Every structure is written in structure tokens, then in C-alpha cells.
Image 1 (cartoon, rainbow, N blue to C red):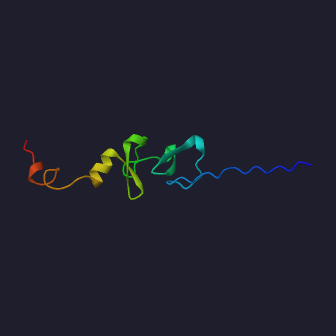
Image 2 (image 1 turned 90 degrees about the vertical axis):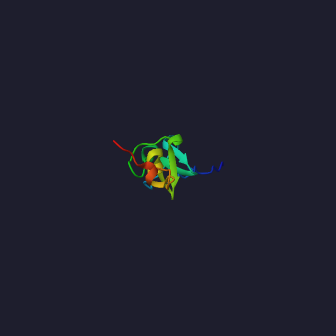
Length: 88
């Protein structure tokens, strides 16, 4: 009599955005977390993102433009103050 071990599938990680299981063929890894390909979207403008074109801030992902707008360098010489005034 042969005793066989029952098959136990490897548990799938949960998507950071929607909380559903992420299977290998639809998984995108970013910051050691798993995402569905369709869930990888900017938190501000909802634009679909590619791995090289996103930034992380407080656990949320942003496109490069929204990240710079929301969390970029501020102050004199960086678009705020007299240095940013233009005349028509």
C-alpha cells in the first residue's frame, strides 16, 4: 500500500489594492508587495502604471507626475515664490 501526500497548493498572496488573491500569471511585484496588473494605478489620477514609472509614498503608488506634484521639492526656486512669476 502506497501512501501519497495530498496535494497542497501554495497559497497566493493578496493584492494590496483590492485584497483578492493574486495568481502568478497576473502578479506584479513592487516594494515586496503583490498587485494585480489592473490594480497598479496611480492613487491620484488612476493612470495605469508600469514598474519603472511609479513611486511609493506611505504605502500608496503614484505616477511620476502626480508624485512630483504632491510630494516634490517645494520652496524658493522650485516653482513657488517670486522665482516662479511669469509675465505675459
